[in-house]
Length: 256
Length: 261
Image (cartoon, rainbow over all chains, first blue to last red; front, top):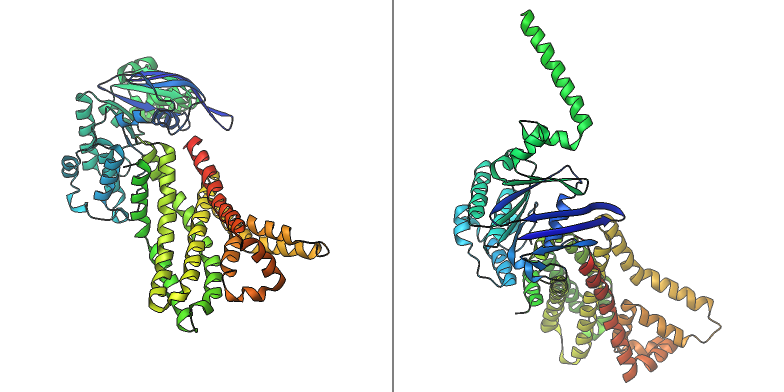
């Protein structure tokens, strides 16, 4: 569904993507992980056409996306921060995006699902952050696109809505969508991701399932595996301190 | 419907309902209303109204424009991820924004005229309306152009205000200094050229020459009238005004079209 070939991108001579190669298929959820500045956002933005790569190509459903804008009909995007025109109301915003996409889009069911019925006529500036985030999610989902991109979807959502969104994401996966997620919440990765794409220093360091990632780092816990990849030195220091504390506590235990 | 038109429509809805638009409308309603009410008639207060327009319209357009640009950056990201050409998106935003600013201005002045105006003043009123509208379109374009150049809000704001100050005050100061230094030489052509280069001056001259008091401008008035009063003069100044809209708009659209967001 999505093929990224040797994509390179620098910002003011600072290389951010250094030859990224990935392929993503239908019916899977891909979690993008990596330390800050590893190029996750730049890569997702390149897929959306917000950032133009210096080299390489991106194909969506076999179509080169360069100088193309119609492919975005296939994509639903939920940005990290929801920021809408202040003086429009929720309904008008839905209508606006519907007009632009020239698609009917079904938001009724989603509005009910996220319990936003009462707020349809409220100006967007009066909505709380979490409410806006729900609107944001509905905008991404209402046109039933083949590809869904979520940038930190849990930001600002209360636990119930977060749970609901996760269920929705899984449902969409089962309906054959290609889903891309960036997140800092590792439990979310465990629950949702079919594959992890780990970016490190502008390159794909690892692509595979969670189990494969754990096995490759000989760890049982995702957090530790990721810490190990990201900063080996720091990780070893931490591990040593951990051993030390457990030895001390064992000693105390024994004395007691 | 064309995609730009859709963006214009919603930008228009959004900005026209904002505090700013209402305040702006009220301002022109009260100030021009007050000036007309306390003076003998429309033609008598035109010079004062003109000065207020030349001062306020560029300022509000440039400040509101740049604020709008920075505030709508995140939303623009969402829109750019839709099946839409960037050019259509940004052109739509520009036209919606400049359109709603012009509408507030026109409604304020127009309403006052309906209340106090007379038929003989209609030519002057149209001239004022035209000058204000073109200035709105020019300075909104300049604001967006500055916004797209500078990621940093504070810097963008500072530069926008500087541009306004330059067009309104500094330019005239330099112009005067130039006239003073070269007073020995025939300066008619240079003076005319200088005025064309600044849209605020251009707007001022276009309205002033239609006032009876233009006769009081003496030699300058005569020179300007000789140029700006002729058909070719009107064509040149009209063209210069349009160029002032087109140039910043085009560089804004070009930059926004190729930028990484």
